[in-house]
Length: 382
Image: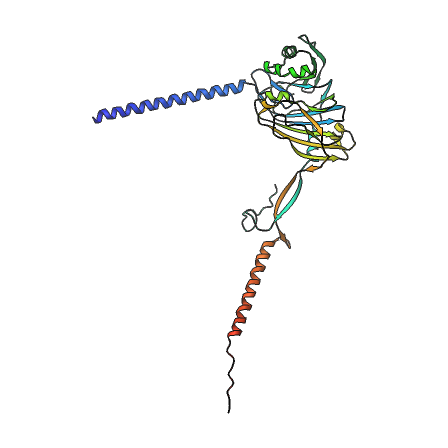
């Protein structure tokens, strides 16, 4: 009986091991398939257009920054993308409401805007010590820290080479014809993006198609790309966003608007509520900001917006004038309240209180002793 039981236990153990090995192999194969799919599937990610990698490569846009100048008649957009992936080349499509002029943007523009809109820093004092203050702190350091269209219904307005960009400016009366032209001319456009261009074709918008590649052969598109500047006539301030609904991953938009007044989006268009991080009047624009907005006073509004679910994007951003209320973020540094070269106020207060208490106690004891001292009796001689 013991031998039979021992054999049975061995068989059960073997069966369990076999099942476990099969599960591990199944999970491993599934993981390999998922990884292979992620390498082949392109990531369409671009706030105002569609970034398309070449072949089976991948590209994703971590962040899109745009500076927009609108004077009531003409709109100029300067865009800079931070990308990741393994693509050596990529294509990018942006619809615009009018005939566009395209040139390279100034890389210094966004750095200058960052300096103009930097948060105000203030000190905020607290009375009682915290974990970073004496006597709880342990660190006493300073703490610093142009060919013709291949399909009917497509017109080529212009074709030019701008640094790493091959730019085609197009018109189209048929989204399928536009898709055919793009594919024929090296833009690997997915079928679903062709359908997404339909509303722009109906509104008779035009298109800026861009092919881009690193200047060094063999390197991949990664990091911050050279800014691109696109100018077109527009009676309203509009920022194209509809094609972003094709993005596979959450998107972040940073938008700096230079106009005669403070400007904000009319709606969130399917993303989180846009957050104003700066609004103010720039009295004397200089450098790259002046090159974009002119040397006259201008209002600058900086917006940040998250799109956790890009497929919910329902329209382009249309911005409107709002009250010219200034706003600047304030970053507080918490400091312990001190006097006389760094002596904590709480220590003086507590020490003074203890001294007063001790003095009061001492006086009370002395008074009590005087009260208890017996008075000398007077003897009568009678």
